[in-house]
Image 1 (cartoon, rainbow, N blue to C red):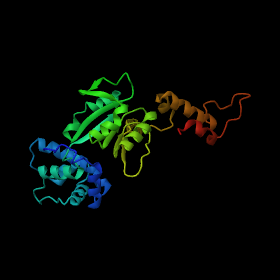
Image 2: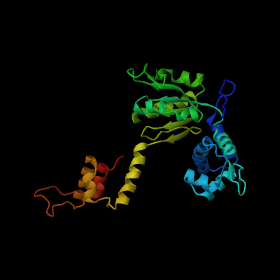
Image 3: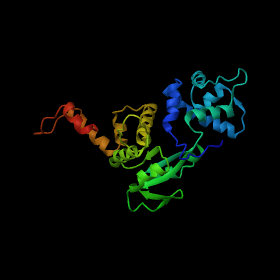
Image 4: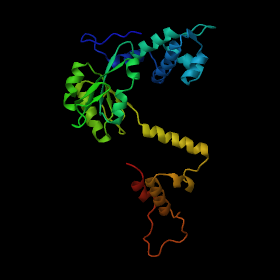
Length: 285
């Protein structure tokens, strides 16, 4: 599927697709599922599958078929009874709705391990995104290459955003630098940001931020694994396997609540504080 390259007379605008979707009354939850459908449809297209039923496509996308049919009704696509949906047409419909019928230049800021991995990710180009530039402030990193692109200094950020018509920025910096980088991207004209830094960014109205926090996703998986194993969250067997800071915090709370292993407090020990007094030392800000 061909995509026109952006030019000075046709600067990509990531907000255009969102504004069109909102004007047509497409819910944000539906928009969030469209990439799942597109991925499943693209796999079918690559296998030269001409049509697909709502049940088959829903299973491939990980949603139920009633929700899929409702989502597609917002696109004006209802399929054909007994035949299903035309795969190629749906690929085009969803790609157009998501704004993927043109290339989107992307700038990645912070070329550490994650930045390198993203720069080398082949899925960008196949899905309509072109890495226009890699930026970093570390003089030991600037001048190196990743995915065949030179790493340029942060001082060039504003010029690159303007000259390359960049409207999407990817932040993979340490958390302490993320907000400053975000501010500079926004001031330069970037209106959509994908944030991999483990921090919350503040942006003005009209700027969209999507946050990807791998550690949070792993913690959620750990929660479900614990439940599947039948472990109690506060059980000693669980705490024995926990990281040191977690074990120390749990022991502190247990002592404060009088729940230590020793039935008798140590002689001349200071009175234990209440759990409320200790929460600030245990819970993250």
